[in-house]
Image (cartoon, rainbow, N blue to C red; front, side, top):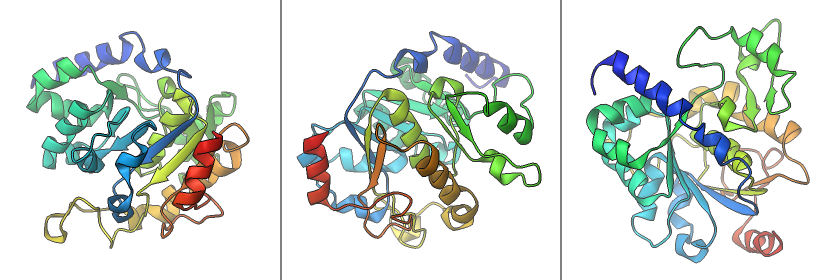
Amino acid sequence: MNNPVVLDSWLCGLWDEGRKFQQCKGIHSGPVIIFASGPSAAQFPLERYAHVPFITMNGAIARFSQTAARPLFYLCDDQGFVRERRQLVLEGIRLSSHAALGANALKVLMQASPDIVEMAKPYLMLRVNRPLSGTPLSDRQFAWNARGNAELECGFSLFERKPNRIGFSRNMALGYFGGRTIPYAAVQLAFHLGFDHVFLVGMDLNAQAGRFYEQADEALPSRLDDDYKDYILPSFQLMAKRVVGENFQVFNLSIDSRMPTTVVPKIDLAQFEALLARS
């Protein structure tokens, strides 16, 4: 399927087919582990917590290939990653109960491995205000309109563009805010699915330290340093202020994470187990 028009039509059909994200809204509860690819993820005792639902992403699936633990969801919204690491994406689809991919990532995968995609029937992840057809609103118009939607939280500024791109979606059927880091999409998915205790593993946010599954000479480029101050940190700050509360809590198991503990509380394994026991 290499015809762009046919691909776009196929994506529209995939998005409209039963609104898959709407069908899984709120069907889970309790804890979920979001497993990212920072170096600290290599040390996490994955099999010990195989009974807890996992959401993983991109190359972090490499850890699951070595264990009996299996993710509930695998996410990828990076077309460059699909091109360079397609086998890891296919492994994510194979090992996970469900897969969700961004539109451009899914196009690339559909061109390279159409049989796998057709068999897996992945969820299509769309960013807010990025429709498959038609013209998106300006960032400011979208942010203004989102103020009246209880399922969307969004920054707003008349004078700056970037605050209008910062937000949190409680409903993946309405799209998600990228936050310039895939774990942020995973947190929104966790909320959408109904989980109330989210534990982040491997969210170190340290570009120099790399990813646990890559060697230095083969590592793909990272934009963490470019995006941290303007997008990543403000996104998690908005989440901490407007979304986190008694019924939805987020914790960071990466003690050395760049994310301040005042934004996402850092905990160790003992505290993690205590929270698991209570949730």
